[in-house]
Image 1 (cartoon, rainbow, N blue to C red):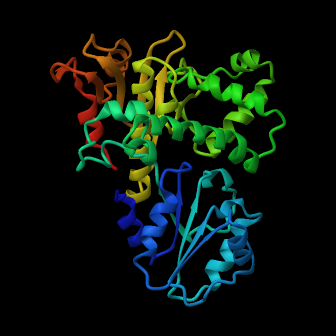
Image 2 (image 1 turned 30 degrees about the vertical axis):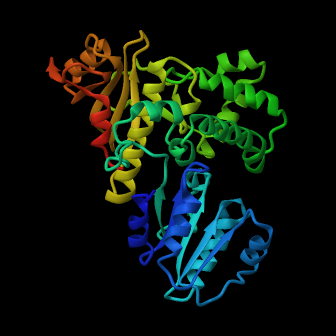
Image 3 (image 1 turned 90 degrees about the vertical axis):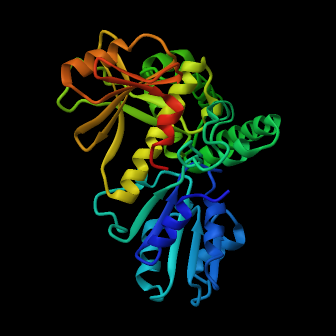
Length: 373
């Protein structure tokens, strides 16, 4: 299935290096090889491959290559300085595409040696917006059960989707994490991972998780940072600018693979919407040079709004996610009345769209279809 980012990447490659980043098995290698088909002379090298690694270290590819694809290069020691040297000395006609399954912003530091030399493109799992012209566009149940990763989503048999997920998780916890950092006790890491699957949508208490697993809170934070850096989970923090200080500070965590969520339909829907809004924010930032971010609102007495979509320090819209067409959200009503935010209640099983107390109550799937990518 064609990915929207393909043409966008091809447009950027003549201008600067392109970094294509996102979760493992989201389709980065596939799209890179599809892009290579547009060049008569191209080279694909994967740092995970021993033979390719030797070529990369020696910069021994053909100088006539019009496109150089370097996959998983972030695993190379001092990869940024290496890449700077390659980019600054390459033939003028040569273009460079770098892909990776670890968050490149984890590696950003003051005085980044690559500053001004690249554009970032985020490749995330499928969303309704990306598939709006396919038969899957309104099949939200498929997204909730299988998640949006291409292989399980497109599998003919749901059992094959489950088999993919088992292999995916096992690979993440036994291979990728060890390549990123030294974990002394993999069993504790697995326990934290399993607990997080049951806590989607709730502010994360490092202390509580630490007590459950019998480890230090700082160890829990370390494990979660690793899961974030490898695009396994993502953090949604409270929005605080120009809002009363009575808000909680703990983040909420969601999975890039919705199929991993353990909980009721409400938890799965909230994760699904979070991922779609995050993908929308990345698209705004990557392709329109905006400064979008995803947050939430929750007071210490428990009044909450599921999501805030902010552009810089300004709130664009606040959202509440509901599984069925029930009463208007108390939190949405409170924050809308106090701050006059544009507000929307997204309902999965909605009888009729309407506006109530200046709050739009809309069909969840239809709204997700309207987002970028």
